[in-house]
Image (cartoon, rainbow, N blue to C red; front, side):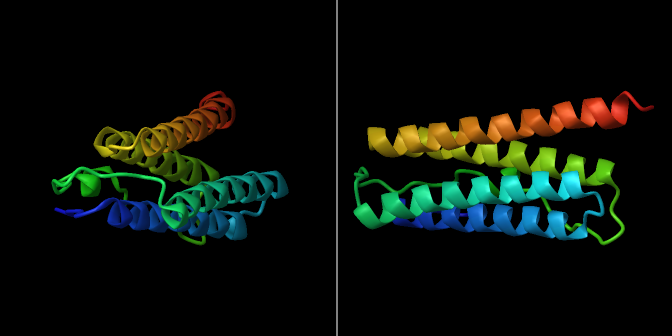
Length: 151
């Protein structure tokens, strides 16, 4: 299991996860044949870029405090999904991957908020968790409207 010894390691990990989300949505956008779908995935990539920028600002400002104890076993690996989009992936599969990724991000940020000592950092992680849950809901609505209702 991944262990973090300080808040900078947590922030670096979260920044990496946000970049992975940016890459994920840009890849889905590039593979999408539908222009509206392409646009939606680009918008999500931009949102994830803003999350990354917020985390980088917190790390650079150093406006956080951590207790002397080590932060151990957040079980981050349990929240990650193995995403391997393919060129011939259906829109349904893309939505499922996106929902799972957003759920994993929500759980990760919730766990990080629970470990944050500084109220500002805790609030940042809670806000990021909220944003990820909104993304998931948006994909669920899209899935319901375009996949479930058509079948």
